[in-house]
Image 1 (cartoon, rainbow, N blue to C red):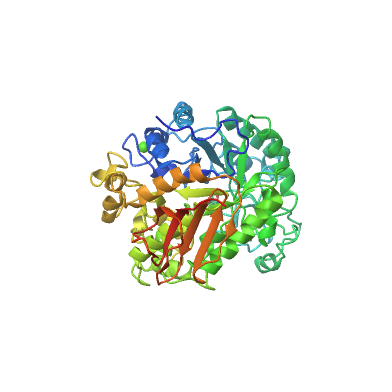
Image 2 (image 1 turned 90 degrees about the vertical axis):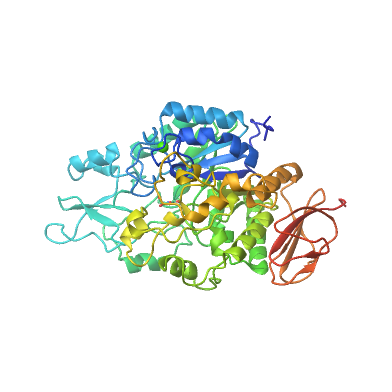
Length: 553
Ligand code: NOJ
Ligand code: CA
């Protein structure tokens, strides 16, 4: 019997939920064509229930040419035929809900794909037409418009403007296959409301909003240069492209739709904003309700750094009345079991990771054992924090990044658009190993769409499921305990044995102590409920976290 996770009508079910991100093309392949699919997910609902997650966040599953892993959407109200049908989607929702697991789907409102019906219409229609007004078109410079309207670069490298052959160019902040919508256009606004209702009516519990801070734009007739754009202040809500104040008018409209449902549909914003205080608007109850913070993901493995991030984000959650979000890994970053085995990044964010990826995994030297030990310790600390925990498929197996994917097998546009500088994000998107052996390690009956390394077998679900010391067992126990122990969304800090130790207390006698240092410290008082690594009782070893039960005060 599956334990019922939460009251299905509790409007605040998401506040302290453990949310498991599925990157559908790499999770489970039911029909053996090498691509993960929705029936594959349905077939693994028991696994998710046993893991103990409260919700699944499903990355895009819409029809797509996969120019950007599905974040180039052809049709917002359908399923990619390679992943299944709307009927398969309904069956997946029913299976998840039957197991007490909610479903959050990714929505990509900043840009469609260039194959979207509206973009095709825009290309076929003349300059100045209503069809072109749904996107961001501008005349090129030069006598025939043969020069781009501005020298802007896209987020994936290369130009952000692409010509359409009649003197006009369109804006794409990401790949050329991802034209940006014009959110001042009423049809665009109305169509997204229709999409939110479409999936909500099908039982979806919430939405993860892609690039939530980019929708509102204000392009003057004379466009600034890239250098001028970069120099513009992002903290005032008046930057031409990013985090403009009026973006919240859009989300206020969305909120009214969410609140038509019982319980209200939820949303979590992917909003890379600065200063972090600006995140609060996305997390407000009149807006999307919750926003990702990627601060832990960006932090080195360091007690003081973690403590700062935790304090700042909990304070912000109190201010907004939302709950905070914790993330170590997702489909865009090097997996944390690998990050923590590389030299710290310090002031040069992600430098060692980039070098390591570019070298195919040889330089700088990776200490994979240490990386996993730290990842387990960090995760056990994170799962003791108030707020929601977002987990990425495969981290419960302790999977590391795959660095040695051959160039010809790579798929990520960042690799193609920045040759020699960035190999991209394929290394964290390699299909999940379910069995020790077999074609694609049980992912499907055939090969996988991205090659899996030989070492995946020993990290498979099958290899770990019966091993009480495995990473999978740790996640299962932690998630089960967390559900039982979690009460109010508060914590207090206890004095710790050293600067390299964090000791937190949750109400009801639940404590977590994390030793970030290289030497053991005395084990604090209390009954050990769970440890991220081997312990002998009297000491808390280096790079290890324990959960303790103490008599509540
Ligand atoms: C953020 C997504 O997480 C990423 O995978 C994608 O490439 C960009 N948004 C563009 O949609
Ligand atoms: Ca398939």
